[in-house]
Image 1 (spheres, rainbow, N blue to C red):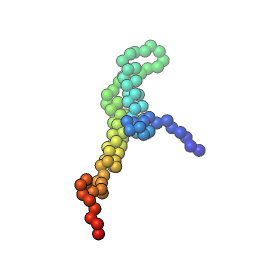
Image 2: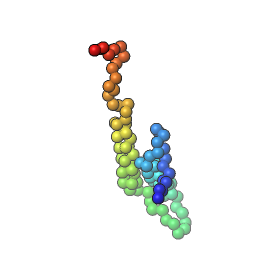
Image 3: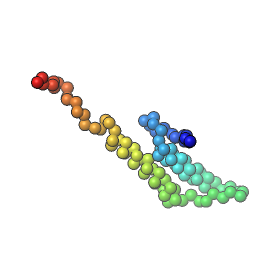
Image 4: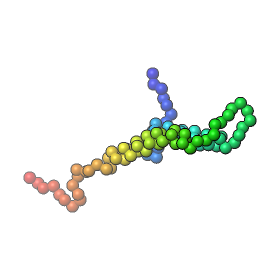
Length: 94
């Protein structure tokens, strides 16, 4: 049984779980900040915004995302040394 999970696409057009988690985490922290600015009268209480709690929540998500981007950039085919001869050199006939 396959469960399809919708993932956001990062700048290279590929779906990314780490980008999706970082995006959702950032939006949760922004919602917490906005809701903590206003005091609501009612049964739901929003606790005061804490930057240390927010950073404790966001740091692992952002480290995972940027770590994945760094590893992808480090291992991309464009960074590998090519075995082709430079232009102007011809193969010697044996």
